[in-house]
Length: 99
Image 1 (tube, rainbow, N blue to C red):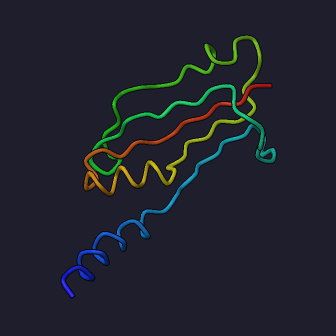
Image 2: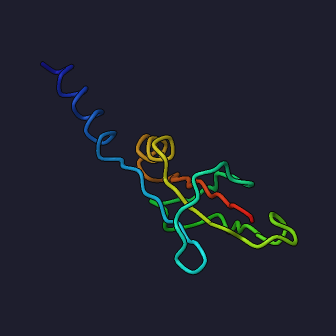
Image 3: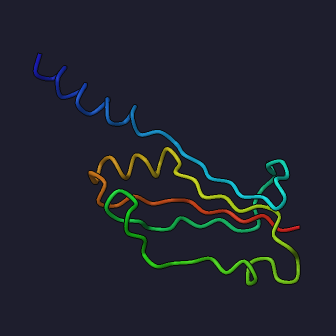
């Protein structure tokens, strides 16, 4: 019976750790589904409230091209890491698409 409680107490937080995505496109264009030109996982701490002061310079990523889409996502892996560290480490994945 005790093993069941342990299994449930480990499984419930994993099921509650959902994925979240924020996508920004110029002029409200539809989302791009192709492979991004840039992808990086960035560290956040204390449930995502404290970033590691990293930023992405889209001019360096896209050069002379314009930005087509920017996306920040909390993937399953990011959520899993957040759950097992009790929210102390909560990474996010950032992606950039260029024209």
